[in-house]
Each structure stands twice: as structure tokens, then as C-alpha cells.
Length: 370
Image (cartoon, rainbow, N blue to C red; front, side, top):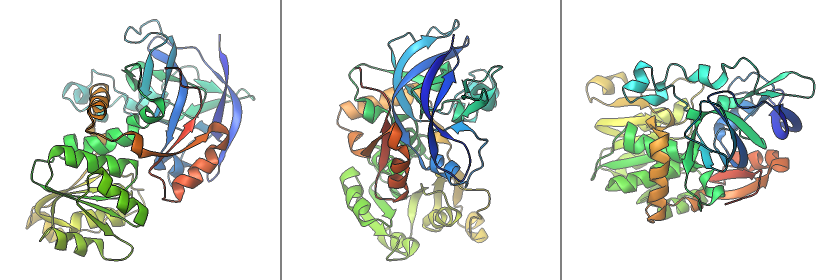
């Protein structure tokens, strides 16, 4: 048996999303069927829509979502119908070299688990297969995902807030706490103050950073940064951000985090480091971008440039921990969501995201049931 659902489909890129009726398959042995309540809009979705990153269309975008389990496969024992779950794109097999060594985000079977299915998860009215981004496809009334793509969360959590845990919060928090391992007393700069950037700012505060500098071009976000824990801010539209950060820190930061996703901002993160500092790239930089570096600073000053995919997360442990932080008043989650749209108005939501004025935009797909 299969189910008809409504979804926002990208049929060509560059392009916008079309609201269509699709058919979603029943769960396979290791799969979970989730009725989506809310999904977050991410810049990676926007870059698939504008053609910055190539995507095989038709495809249902969306990878950070929250909803209720309505069906499970025969081999699924961790979840039951009625459970509330959050999706995360860093699905893992649990048995490859990377998974067994604690590097689940580098799982070599991730693509196979996301897309390697005999029958398509989704088909359209013409009977053609429709892909689901990251094996999730959260911009739909239901999503059929691998069991290692979701984590259960306790009843009573505000679902609008929970929808951003699977990407924005996990990436920003994990990059600081797990990828870079910021230590108490160190200095931190965060370039790009969106959902990921503000999560990184909060993680730096939790890590005990002595100085946290928020860098952006939107004045309203620079003001908000102070509410999330930034000690200083730099408007990169009005001044050279590298010179400003180096002046504020008397020679550069211990850590710089890039959340914009351009070669230029990654180069700025590296340039604003003190000797021995580490720049961590959280944003998705297109292959066409080059990153300007001074080679002498790599070996003479022992600076480092590294990437962090999804915050090097262990999301089935991390996401419940972040919810505990929020309940203890240590992490501001509700404040990350600044705009809400319906599935029918999702394109307007992406316009709002592209404007740079919102922190995180979510779409309401189903009703909050818990």
C-alpha cells in the first residue's frame, strides 16, 4: 500500500518549488515513515534551487524537520508509531571504519543509505521517481527515511523549535564543541550570523570562550548577536573584518568559524587567526570557489584550515543533549526561529531567507500534536 501526500518539488534548477501530489512508498525493513510537522529552510536548499549546487530533478528538498512516526519497517525496534522524531542528513551505517572510530559524519555508506533503494520512495503523477534530498525530503506531508536518519525527542518539546535541531543547531554547536574543541579562555570569531552562526556563538559561550566576535553585514543581526553571547561585533560591510578582528583580539583569534559558504569568507577566517589558530569552515563552499591563503602562514605560523561537516555530530546523542541545554536555560532555541510560512507559501519563505534579515525560517506542514 502507498499513500498520497502533498509536497514542494523542485522540477528544474534554477527554479522555484511546485506544490504537487506525490505517492510515498511504505517503509522498507530499516525505514521509518514520518508525518512532518515543521521543516527548516537551509541555504543549501536555496543553493540547489538557484543552481549553485547541481541537483538531479525532480526532487523534494528539506533535510531538517520534525514530526510524528506513523509507520516503521520490520527491522526497526528503536521507534514506534506516535514517537516524535527529528531528522538529520548525516545518516550512518554503524559498521564501517569511520562509524566504528567515532566519525559517523564520514560514513562511507551514507549515499547508499540515503538513495540506494530498489523502489523509489516518491513518485509523481506521471509515475516518475522523485528524489528526496539527503534521503529525507522534508518539504512534504510525510517523509520515508532510514532509521539512522532520525532521533527521538521527548514529548512536550515545541515542534517549531525542534525543526532546526537537525542541521542549524547541530552544525553550529558541533563545529565549536566537537570539531574545533574550543577551550575556556580562548577567543572566537564567527563569520555569518544565521541559524548556524548563532548556534556557533552560543556554543562558544558554553565552552567558556573569553571573547566571541560576531561578523556579518546586517546591522540587526549584529545587535542580536549580543543577545546570543557575542562580546563584540564587526560590520563587514563598513570595515575590513580581518583588520577589525585582529585589532579587537590584539593579533588574531584562537578560532574562526565560517558560516557563509564562500571562498572569500573562508580566506578571511584563516587571515584573522593568531599563530597556531584554527579556522573551521561550516558553510558549503562551491567547488568553483578558490580560498585565498598565505602559504607562509601555514608553516611559519602553524595556522590550520579545516572543514566540519554537520558539526562532526553524533546526532542521536547530541540533539537530546542540546534539548537539555535549552531546558536548563543554557541554549536559546526559540530565538533562532524568526519567521514561519506554510507549505503553500514556501517560496516566499525562501525569499525571506535570501534577504539575509531572518535567522532561521521554518515551514509549517502539519499540526503540532504534542
